[in-house]
Amino acid sequence: MGAATEINRLRWQCRRGMRELDLLLLQFLDSGYADLDANATLAFNRLLDCPDALLLEWLLGRQLPSDKEVADVVQRIRRRPAA
Image (cartoon, rainbow, N blue to C red; front, top):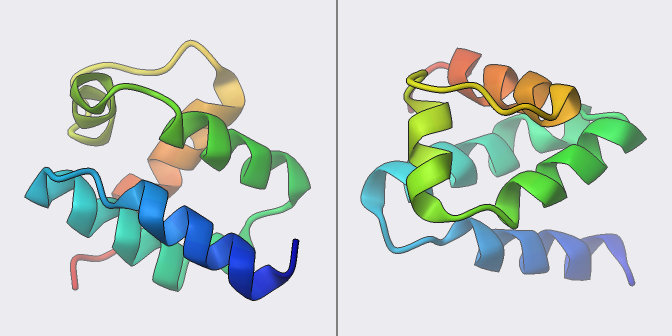
């Protein structure tokens, strides 16, 4: 799968139908995803497989993922400045 195809797939997965999640995830995809190493890239993909309610809890800082690599990606997303 080419890089552009992969980004398009991720962009589609980042569109959750919940404005807050869409903004956080798409902004990170556009401005932070390229900085991830291979393990963090896999963790981001695992993050996108999680239910929206859980993602929202994590991204708002109400809960932390038990998966350390996913937790690191969540922290990266939370540290990104708002657009």
